[in-house]
Length: 282
Ligand code: GUN
Image (cartoon, rainbow, N blue to C red; front, side):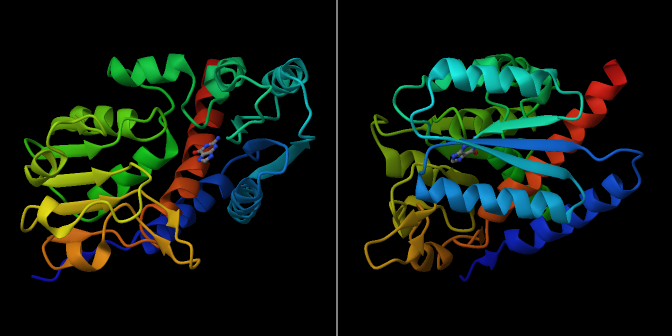
């Protein structure tokens, strides 16, 4: 069998196009501010890409770049200013933060109504409780790929490999909300390959290059690869051995060009949602 390739790049481009049309029809420009602290080189690339995509879709986008020795109090003061600024609809504090700043403190300081990362405990709790709120961008993007690809979710066995706050846990909640039977497997699971082999839908989000092999995958399964790992030779690979998996799976996302492009598109979607929700309350 050769798997169908699920083209996240084109699904993301179409979503950005729909968002741009909706933004153009508004009487205001939704505002997104990304806060970057220090000089993490990967963060620099991510932040520039977010800014470019947001501006291209008609958002009022801006980056606030603070020095690496910024204190936690100074970062919280910056976040408080953005919380109070009526022109700002979405705030994203780029991770990782320097060691003198507690990540949880920064996340908790963001107004939950402007929390376009969906990382605030209030939004995480809402998701777990099945209530509406802002949902983390990458899992939201995976749900779009599944929907656009016509993958049947109700009653399907979904296995999420990885239990991070950013991907694994919210991913499992979204799949549960879509009536999947959900298993969260992780580094301490007794039989990882066996757990993964039970999946109709396997979402790999562990950050270990090419960990998922052909014999972890049930024939015909849908494989979603969230991993983006750079090998020593510079090559980008996912958490799934793509060549092996594509011979067994029914459908699979590539790396790059699968889940990655969806994350930024869903950041814009969250920013538009936040802008509309906040104005409806005002
Ligand atoms: N760093 C890597 N991924 C992310 C993300 O999704 N959000 C934020 N804020 N920082 C990140």
